[in-house]
Amino acid sequence: MVKQQMQAGLHPNLYQAVVNITNNVDPSEAVRPSGLRVRVGGLPHLFSGMPIMLIREIPFSVIQMSLYESLKFFVNKSEKYSEYFYYLLPLLGAISGGCSAFLTTPLDVIKTRIMLQRKRTHRLPNIRSIVREIATEPSRPGDRFGTVQKFFRGGSARVLWISLGGSIFFGSYEFVKSKLALTQ
Image 1: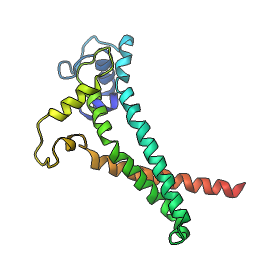
Image 2: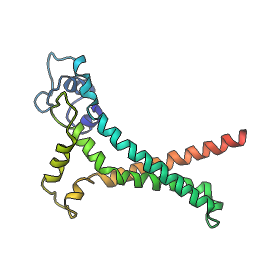
Image 3: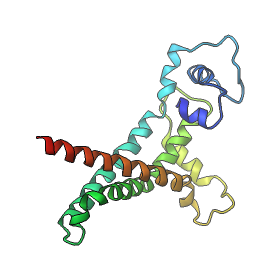
Image 4: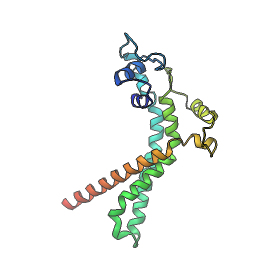
């Protein structure tokens, strides 16, 4: 929550972000809340994006790991690619990460909107109302794909950085795993 709101420029520093969020202060109303301290009773506001984050991460992980293992199995069984097996693993990690990132971008957009809400209630955020808000907002210049595009905003950047991360993660994982197998 703090990271998302600071990235959106809603708070001048980390301390003010935590104070404003735990006191449920709209950042546009009070940039420097004088006399306010971190409110222990407001700590749950720091985690208001947690349910949707988990809703996003579970399908992301299932897609990424299943696709990676399937691609790895295909490459390992293929006579054409088997000699390049270890060299292709970072590419397979990038493909599986990128595909899972793209497919779960709508959940990421919803999560970001929930985390950037100005005022919080003590109830869990209403995902349905966030989806309705995104679907009915005006189109932006350059929108060519209608309502669906609204749920994929930021998708290309997300696919890029998660593809790079998948390449590094899976490539490193397989490298270390192969080196550890040699020592046994």
